[in-house]
Amino acid sequence: MLLWLAISLACLSISCPPFQMSCSTYMLVRELSLFLSQIAVCLILTLRIYALYGRSRRLLSCMVITGIALTGGASAGSFGDNSNTATYIQGSDCHNTFTAETAARYGLAWVAVFVYELLIFVLTIFRTCKTRGFLLSSSSSRNILDIIFQDGAMYFAAMTLINLPNILTYYCGSRKSSHIY
Image (tube, rainbow, N blue to C red; front, top):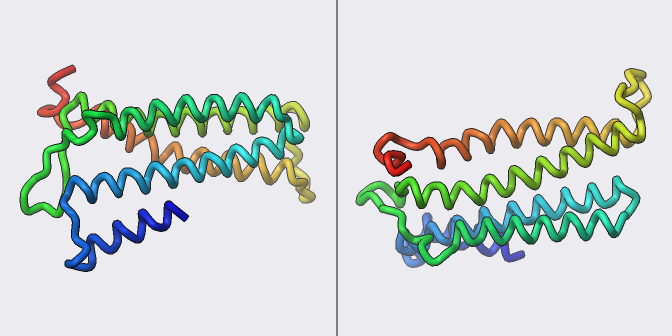
């Protein structure tokens, strides 16, 4: 619900002149909507693993603790006290540039999401190999475990192909912003 409110507010700020916000407010709403959508995706993946492992409360508690720790790190990087240090280019529709230090902090949030998705993928692989062995069946009849493994592998591959270049843009930006390292 809150996610759709943030997205609606961001869309209104772009399309309706009475609702237009400053660039810093728009970027905050944008970051908040990205943050909340990633939390929703990670919660769904956590429920999937919880079901795959037979509703193991021990595994769920470990995943919740890991998720809270990664969320804390991501939110500190994205919304910390120095999070509004972007430089806005005049006349460019709220595009921003970051110093190398600020970009590394924003990149931390995407690294946290990648680490959590990697954990989910490793748990999926482990459960599949433990249950089915290392060789998956190649017969035409597929059970639910084969489908979960295949869907998990495709999701992880797609998200990795999308997230890794995104993460690299934060850490390997232009020469002008990476001279601090």
